[in-house]
Amino acid sequence: MTIFESIPTCFYHPIKVIFLDDNRAFLDTLELEFNDCINMQTFTNPDAVLCMLNHHREDINKSILTLVNNLDVDTTTDRVVGFEINKILDIIYDKTRFNNTAILVVDYEMPNINGVDFCLKLKGKNIFKIMLTAEADKDTAIKAFNNGAIDKFLLKTNENLYRELAAAIVELTHNYFKKSSQTIIHGYNNSINSLFNNEAYQQLFKKIWLDTQAVEYYMVDNSGSFLFLDKNAVPTWLILRHVKDLHEQLELFQGYDVEDEILLSLSKNEKMLFLPSEKEYKKPVNEWINYLFEAKQLDDNYYYSVVNSRITDSIKWDKVVPYAATLELAEVINS
Image 1 (cartoon, one colour):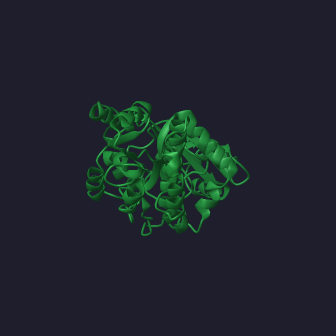
Image 2: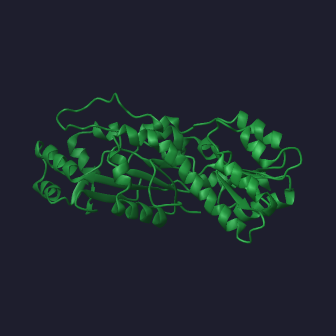
Image 3: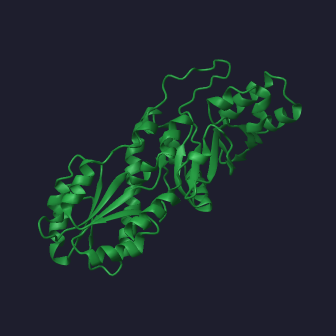
């Protein structure tokens, strides 16, 4: 499964999808179809799902939704940081991020409660709902969709059901993170939103996502830089800087005893400085040279660099929980 659309969100990671159907044979088929690509859990008992969701730890992502408003500002560099790397540390160390239940797939026709009534019991929960229905119940599904009780419905008899279901899950997962990202975007007076709608940036973002086979990503500064992780938590960094930021970086280095060759590369926008966290920022300036990366022009306003390495030890990489571990555990539980 891939990102549904090219517009990025401020963060994204796999989530858990719950399937509820009284037909165990159908659920077994779904597990065969999707178990290797999504973190799924299947139920035949509606009460068991309600019990689980009522005890569900919602909004695990709140730790990275909080804008950093009280950082010290270095007046010599006019540096204003929107995020610190440690704001994403807790979540990438926490395996429960992958168990964040954001989507429910429920059958309409069940013995003790129909799918619409079950979805109404989830009112107020941040969960997107997909209902599977027979042709005879299509009008009921349309009414439920128009009333906001469900977010999508699919005909269970559709010969392309699995493909359409996969697409719906991807779309709603993206919508979940799009909704969660609004807090951050509004905090930047929509400057991030403008960047996300930049077509050149979208294409670059999508290329990195596909080339690295990433399954999660996190915005790490207010310039639009991101950390991508594949299923084994192998990192790739997209470093982005506005032209004015590059000019400020040059002025910064000109204030120190730096080799002319470095100053020349900065003046020609061939290098960009990326200090991932406060730990790197507090290092001596002569060590900042290790955080100069090759810059490529994105458009008239932005330059970027793509770095495939663990460029900071502020992240305890051996403690990062990879998505692959969650898939392996889910496979054992469902076997």
